[in-house]
Image (tube, rainbow, N blue to C red; front, side, top):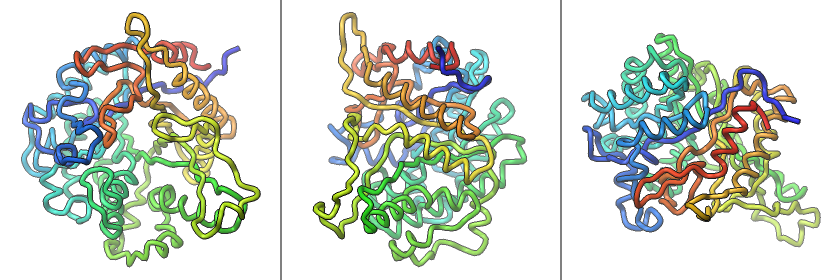
Length: 440
C-alpha cells in the first residue's frame, strides 16, 4: 500500500552555488568570503576549497539531465552574488547573468520549475571588506543585487527565496567563526543577524512589483530538554529562542525573543525605528530546513540530578546529528501555527560514509532509511493540518560541505572528485520511485 502525498505535491532537489559551481575565477566572477575563508589555513578540513567543487559551471547540462531522469518537478539552487556583481554593487557581470539564464531556460525545457535562492552564504569579499553583514549598507547592496537578478530572470521564474539559513550566516560566520568570514564576536553576530533579516524585508518590499512569489528559508532544530529539571527546561527554551525563534519571530511579525536578548546582553543598537516592520513584510511561503534534534542540558545541574533524563536516540549521521524524524513533524506543525501560508521542506538529507561496491555502485541503504522516515514524518504533518506543498531533498550531488570540505557526502549522486564523474546511488533510484508514485 502506498502512503500517498497530496495531488500536485512538489518533489525537488537542491544545491548551492559555492558548493557545486567551481570556476571561482572564470566568467568574470568576483571573490567571495568563502574563497577567502577556504584558502585560509586551518579553516576547512584537509585544506579543501571550492575552487573546483563539482565543476557544475562547466557540467551544468549533465547535472540538469540527471534531474530530468530523476523525475523532479522543481530544483532549488542559489545564485552566486559575486558571479553577477563581482564587487557586490554597481558593476554587473553579464556573463554571470547569462550562466543562470541558460540554467533557467534549460530547466523549463525539461519541465523542472526553478526555485532560486538569492543568498546561500557566498557574500562578495568586497562587501566584507567594508564590514560585511555587520553594517547596514550590505543589506542595501543586497536589494540592488536582488532587483538586478529578479529583473533578469523574473519573467520565467515565479518562486524565489531571499536567504538560506540566516542563523548559519550570522552565528557560524560572525559569532562562532566556524564559517566564512570567520569572525568571533557576539555583537557582530547579532548585528549580522539583524542586517540579514533587514535585507530580506527590504527585498520583499522592493521586488514584489515584479509579480513573483517570495519566501525565506529557515533552519530549525527540534530543541528538547534533556530532563524535566526546571534548569534543563529553561535551557531548552533559551536555545530554541536563540536558534529558531530569533529568526522566525521577526519575519512573522514579532520581535526578537526577550529572554534571548537578555541572555546575549544585546543593546539592540543596530535596530532602527521601523526595521521590524520592514523585516515582517508578508512572505508568500516559508522554507524549512530540518535535519536533527538537540537534547539541551543546563550547565547549572549535575547529571546525577537528571533521574528522568531523556536519552539520545541510537542513531546518528556522519555529521554527528541525531536521527529524529519526529522533530520534522513537530517543527512543521509549529511553523504552520505561526504562519498562515504554504510551507516547503527546502532541505532534508543525511551524510553517511558511502562505500563503493561492485561496478562503482553505492548501496546507501542508511540514507534511504533516513529519507523514508523523514518523508513519513512530513506526511504526518500534513495529516495534522500543515499546508506542506513540497519537499526538496538535500542534495543532488556530493559537494563541498563548507568547513568539512569534501569529507562529508550528502548526495544521492556520487561525485568522483578526481574525474568529476557522476554516479547515481541507490538512493537516487529510490527517490525516483517515490516521485513516480507520489508517495512511499
